[in-house]
Length: 579
Image: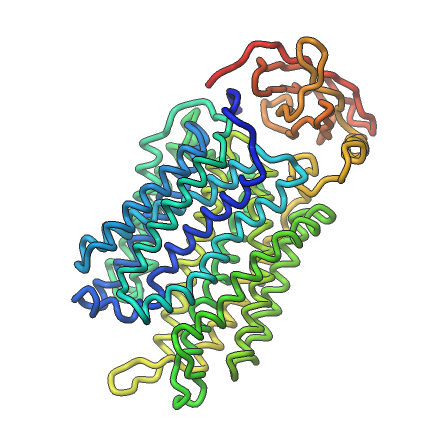
């Protein structure tokens, strides 16, 4: 069992925390989308071959995949705000390196450093869980999770406008400025989380995971260039399997692993991560297909002949709709739970791709497709961190959400490789140029629909999450919230968390531990100190309570498994436990 230690935060969370953290997520998305408008021109701009130019994009993908789970774990151990600022600082340094060069190798170095910013998403979600009250947590995490799409949707037309009318290096100066602004806002508005995981950083595990991910993602991103049946591609896949297997065996033997594979193997966590891959696939297909369809010359008979900027504006509603679905998600999740919301989101995505097969004849039709897909992807993306947060201890939030973000990145990588292969194999060759066909676009949409169908099947297999551990939109008043807790605890324990003088302790972490030492539930006490936890079965349990400024407390109790709520108050000693 992983415990947490706490110390008092230097200042309380303000209303600016959520928009500042969401802005950090948008900055990360801008960094990722930065070079999309100039992809086809990179070989000329860098004076290199097309195969070498692709390393500018591949390097960012690989470093982001490696950094995401590692920064999440470092945040759990040493402070999520601290690691968030570090991630953004490395991104700014990388953007400046890229801004001052037109040579291939320095550009790859700069883009590799920029990839480290991907850790901002799980770190932001972890900060929200640690600091925000329940009634704000659902919509806040939804906005943070959707920020990657919001930033991408907004950045595409903006980057296209800059690339058309100014020097392309201005893209990196702009990214550096946004990153610096995000660092300043984080320092001013976001307090450090008091929650810490015990243990040390698993350096060997980090190196093993990094090697395994690079060996796995490298052939995915370069397989179309090397050949999918080539010795290099197959050899790297085999090496990735061997390294990740050895890494998994190592992690299972450690008391404080980089990734707790036992937690990851829980049904709700495993199925959520697998569904995340499918959502990642569906998100990237539309980003690959619609801009190409819009920019192809009308002389092809199916191309829409739009400029780079207009194409970006037509796809921009994808990100905007994702942002506007955050409050919708909060209400749906509060009433039905994140599992149902994920299912609804996947169904909407399926409708978007199915309808999109017949909406490819005009620019306004692509806007409709973007809006529908944005709504579905926004609901799905918003549900994923809520499902993860509801299934893991608070001390593992950063690492668990880092792994979930990694799963989405793997989905986008697989999508890029597969769709790129489909479009290449179905292209018409005119004067030595490969021109994508309408058949290739439609096959790509069908592949996305198949991925959504698989994701829907995985979502349907998810168990209904424990309502006490799932962030939801709570009742508007403290009395209604307390009544809801009493109704939810018909079979379990309820009571109040009190300090040494008998005063209520708000936002104390109360964990229910079963006879095997496993976490069976967790919750935070209300403003009046009240808590409620349901039990999964009869037997002996331990209720452990912990709060900032107080020592920990544990009480043993048994439950007969019947429909009763056993009253049990928990009294915390007065001394402070520091990390």
